[in-house]
Image (cartoon, rainbow, N blue to C red; front, side, top):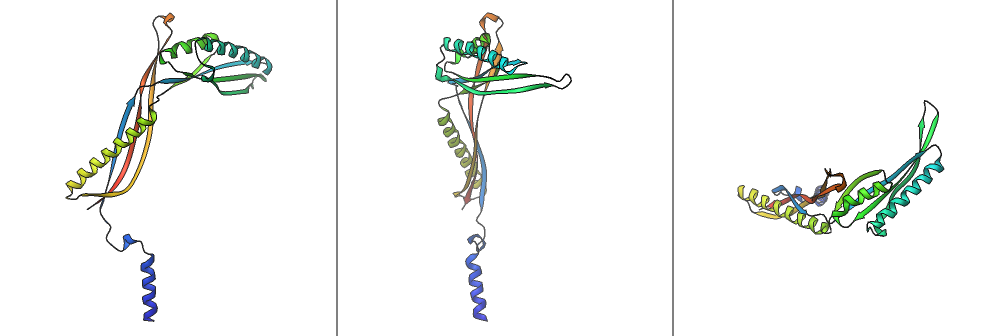
Length: 223
């Protein structure tokens, strides 16, 4: 019986995690955040033509004619054909239940990449004058986005380590090895849209810089 009890005890000890066999080692958990700002290099503009008619064929025909004019005008501004892509296209029915009359709406939306930021306002004005009747947003991008993300993450980890070393010293300890690390990142940018006082000057687009932010939560051992 004693032999069986010893075997059961040995088996139990074998399956226990090592942390339960000794006192938990002390750790410190800290957060670090860093932001890297870079200028925008190009923009993507979403433009659309929306038409409505009692007959779906008429709505489609009018939409196609207006879109053809928009595409021609965009190309005349110097936009390359490969920088103009269809974003979405759909047809839906609009019902008026009070009169039992319905019409058809056709929407054809484009995403236009504008390589020269100074041309963004002119491209929007050109498309709207040619037949587009919606501008659904402008997004700015940077060719340095990947490097900015890496730099922000590196700086966030360095900030977390600095705080951990400070906390460890305050507790009379030295910083040990890395126990765990989690991170999150994101980019933020904006546009300031203003109509120039002189209408002939066109729509003024004032891009803000792009901010790439990384945040980390890091746990270190203490010794």
